[in-house]
Image (cartoon, rainbow, N blue to C red; front, top):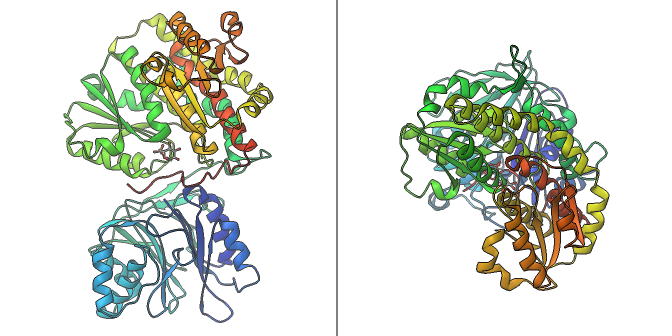
Length: 621
Ligand code: G6P
């Protein structure tokens, strides 16, 4: 986690850095800081604040924020509480060098003890401070420039880092490096300026020419000189400039009070983007078909897959549970769904004919990344389903399908979830077709129905006001139960997670029939139960589960299929969703749950886009 930004060029760096930090606040927002080399006195000015980027701006207000070189940081605390002293940038003993860091230095205790013995003093509780002192120590010892000092210091470091370093004696230079944490450098044609950031979002409005640093690469960035990149041994590395096209409007609320609400309402459009060029009409028969280049290009390996393992975290793991049902149904290949953090340390048996599917919105989740690195070592094919274009997981995957839903800024994932489920549906259909495990009729009917999903979501979104009113009834609940079966069971988990994340209300998702084996004891008139009764193949069984809750005076909010008079007659509170196929039900049933948690959190006066303790991109274990 944590977001870093850097700028060197011809413009004033401070406004560029602050705008960049705001774009990266989804990565962490417990404290922020910046370091600038002033035009007025050529000195280094460091400003820090506990809290959000806006608190940093208030602190720096009316201070000297001149200069065309600077670095900045927004923090998600790992080592040391959120405080001004623990906020980055950290400064070296002499006060010459300063640095911002995203990642974790695992051997920082040993390094710190060694540096203390050599006279270095430490002020913060962070692991990061050791880096800046180590760079200064290396520079003094080797008598070298900043770039070589960074490179040699990093050879002693165990852990993950993306860093930006400046030295006040060299106001023409910015040094950056990365390992396991992402870092992008924006370049302009005449090399007059460079932009540095944890992802492309702070860069794209200035340039779309981006170099993504690779693991253990150090970039030496100098005004009016071409970008130079070296590996830790000092050998110059090739740089590949990628053209990145990001829709800037996606980085703005656009009139919505929060990113989360905007992103919920984005879903009809972004799901069309996700399907564009992939769900197409056959030019010969005009029958609909799914074409995924990753499936076509890896046909042989996919066809021989005896097992698929999905690895992911959080909301992406819930999408994986739906993916399992889709792939098993359409392709008849056994699928396991693992939490990436458990998988990587579980001594997993991975065969060379396994296919590993990492699912990740950010493409940077440390555990998911480590899980696929492990799978690759065993020779399995890694098929990434990722939103972050050019992200670490996308680059590490052998092949894959981007979900293409645009940047997701709200910490609670919404459109990425439906994008992931859409890609998983397309993957299951495409693979099922080449395997011959899906009938042509079912294949076509499912694709036709998938094409209707964006319009059906629009219909649900029209009920926003109704859901807001329902939310007000449940705002003061202390616990919630979410129940669903089959394809709707992972949706129950996701609904509960959404509520926990942004409303801080304890919620549990359960398979509806399992309720009898424990959670039923919790049910009384105080306990809201969100029941997903829609689109289940064994509808009558879900109705029996619903009846069991009613008999115990549970407070039910039912998500029902449009016109379901049976459930309407049983409950007071319900939200209708259009009919669809049961395998596509999650794409509809999750929408009212997203809106419900959003409105409950807003009614409780909480910061929906930046809930406490969470970060959007978890780049630490
Ligand atoms: C964090 C985010 C979640 C996300 C999870 C996995 O916990 O807050 O919204 O689902 O990480 O992230 P990924 O980017 O790999 O999907």
